[in-house]
Amino acid sequence: MANSNFFEQVYTLVSQIPSGKVATYRQIAILLGNPRASRTVGWALHQLPEGSPVPWHRVINAQGKISTTTITELPDWQKILLEQEGIRVPNDGRIDLSQYQYQFEAALG
DNA sequence: ACGGTGACGAGAT
DNA sequence: TATCTCGCCACCG
Image 1 (cartoon, chains in turn cyan, blue, red):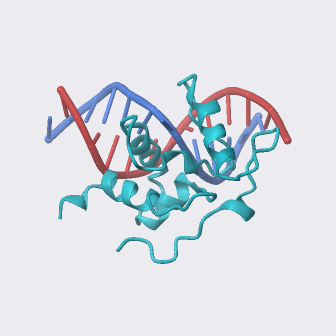
Image 2 (cartoon, rainbow, N blue to C red):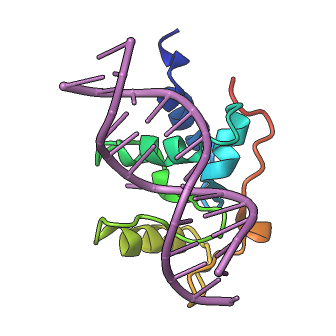
């Protein structure tokens, strides 16, 4: 179908993450069969338009921290969104993955 | 077809 | 533990 692109698969997978849970770029990459394509996963989310229904804010790096390097506003914005969903973000910015990381059970449909 | 790009990751210092 | 460096790979013009 139209969703054979790597990007589309990323979007589909990220859309499965429920409110209050998070996933890592590496986790997504592994589920898509490319353990080393984590950068591409991040890039795919970077390309999302502003009004996208994809919950991009629920994806963080393997350290449990918010990435969003150069873009100034996004880090705080993403933190706010996560806290609104009940995720506790410590002062050092490290989210407890053992508590909040979502385990994709059924992956793609 | 080719090379630059980039919300990453892991190892080295 | 904090930083720095380098390798990775799909997308786009």
